[in-house]
Picture (cartoon, rainbow, N blue to C red):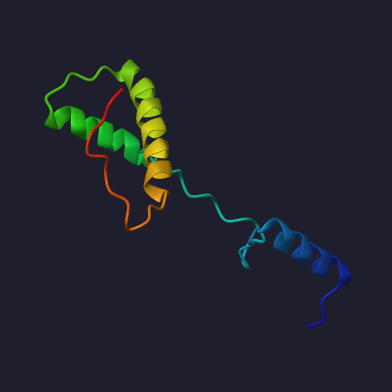
Amino acid sequence: MARTRKSRLKTTAAQATGARETPSTGRKPARKPKSTKEPASDPLDDFIRSAARALALPLEPQWLPAIKANLDTNLRLAALVAEFALPDESEPAPVFTA
Protein backbone atom coordinates (compact mmCIF):
# COMPACT_ATOMS: atom_id res chain seq x y z
CA MET A 1 0.00 0.00 0.00
CA ALA A 2 1.54 3.26 -1.11
CA ARG A 3 1.42 6.15 1.31
CA THR A 4 0.73 9.56 -0.03
CA ARG A 5 2.61 12.69 0.97
CA LYS A 6 -0.46 13.93 2.82
CA SER A 7 -0.71 10.78 4.97
CA ARG A 8 3.01 10.91 5.72
CA LEU A 9 2.74 14.55 6.85
CA LYS A 10 -0.24 13.68 9.00
CA THR A 11 1.68 10.83 10.62
CA THR A 12 4.78 12.97 11.13
CA ALA A 13 2.74 15.75 12.77
CA ALA A 14 1.06 13.26 15.08
CA GLN A 15 4.42 11.77 16.03
CA ALA A 16 5.91 15.22 16.68
CA THR A 17 3.13 16.14 19.09
CA GLY A 18 3.24 12.74 20.77
CA ALA A 19 -0.37 12.03 19.81
CA ARG A 20 -1.42 8.54 18.89
CA GLU A 21 -4.27 7.87 16.58
CA THR A 22 -6.45 4.82 16.83
CA PRO A 23 -6.38 2.90 13.57
CA SER A 24 -10.14 2.44 13.36
CA THR A 25 -11.33 6.03 13.78
CA GLY A 26 -8.27 8.15 13.06
CA ARG A 27 -9.00 10.14 16.24
CA LYS A 28 -6.91 10.65 19.33
CA PRO A 29 -7.78 8.30 22.19
CA ALA A 30 -9.74 9.80 25.07
CA ARG A 31 -7.67 11.12 27.94
CA LYS A 32 -7.67 9.27 31.20
CA PRO A 33 -9.20 11.23 34.07
CA LYS A 34 -6.65 12.89 36.30
CA SER A 35 -5.85 11.13 39.51
CA THR A 36 -7.63 12.33 42.62
CA LYS A 37 -4.63 11.45 44.78
CA GLU A 38 -2.96 14.25 46.70
CA PRO A 39 0.49 15.23 45.47
CA ALA A 40 3.36 13.66 47.37
CA SER A 41 4.10 15.66 50.48
CA ASP A 42 7.49 17.06 51.32
CA PRO A 43 9.59 14.88 53.69
CA LEU A 44 10.18 17.93 55.91
CA ASP A 45 6.43 18.40 56.30
CA ASP A 46 6.06 14.75 57.31
CA PHE A 47 8.97 15.06 59.74
CA ILE A 48 7.55 18.20 61.35
CA ARG A 49 4.12 16.64 61.82
CA SER A 50 5.58 13.41 63.18
CA ALA A 51 7.90 15.21 65.61
CA ALA A 52 5.06 17.41 66.85
CA ARG A 53 2.87 14.35 67.35
CA ALA A 54 5.67 12.45 69.16
CA LEU A 55 6.33 15.39 71.48
CA ALA A 56 2.61 16.08 71.97
CA LEU A 57 3.06 19.64 70.73
CA PRO A 58 0.14 21.53 69.22
CA LEU A 59 0.83 22.38 65.58
CA GLU A 60 -1.20 25.11 63.94
CA PRO A 61 -1.30 24.88 60.11
CA GLN A 62 -0.14 28.49 59.69
CA TRP A 63 3.06 27.71 61.65
CA LEU A 64 4.19 25.04 59.19
CA PRO A 65 5.94 27.35 56.64
CA ALA A 66 7.98 29.12 59.35
CA ILE A 67 8.94 25.85 61.04
CA LYS A 68 9.90 24.37 57.68
CA ALA A 69 12.04 27.41 56.77
CA ASN A 70 13.90 27.26 60.09
CA LEU A 71 14.43 23.51 59.86
CA ASP A 72 15.67 23.81 56.27
CA THR A 73 18.17 26.51 57.31
CA ASN A 74 19.39 24.42 60.25
CA LEU A 75 19.86 21.35 58.03
CA ARG A 76 21.83 23.33 55.43
CA LEU A 77 24.11 24.81 58.13
CA ALA A 78 24.59 21.40 59.74
CA ALA A 79 25.63 19.99 56.36
CA LEU A 80 28.32 22.68 56.08
CA VAL A 81 29.70 21.77 59.51
CA ALA A 82 29.52 18.03 58.81
CA GLU A 83 31.44 18.30 55.52
CA PHE A 84 34.32 20.22 57.11
CA ALA A 85 37.20 17.75 57.39
CA LEU A 86 39.23 17.75 60.59
CA PRO A 87 42.61 16.08 60.94
CA ASP A 88 42.72 12.93 63.10
CA GLU A 89 44.99 14.70 65.62
CA SER A 90 42.33 17.33 66.43
CA GLU A 91 41.05 17.24 69.99
CA PRO A 92 38.53 19.43 71.80
CA ALA A 93 39.89 22.23 73.93
CA PRO A 94 40.14 21.23 77.60
CA VAL A 95 38.87 24.61 78.85
CA PHE A 96 36.44 26.97 77.13
CA THR A 97 36.55 30.64 78.11
CA ALA A 98 34.71 33.62 76.77
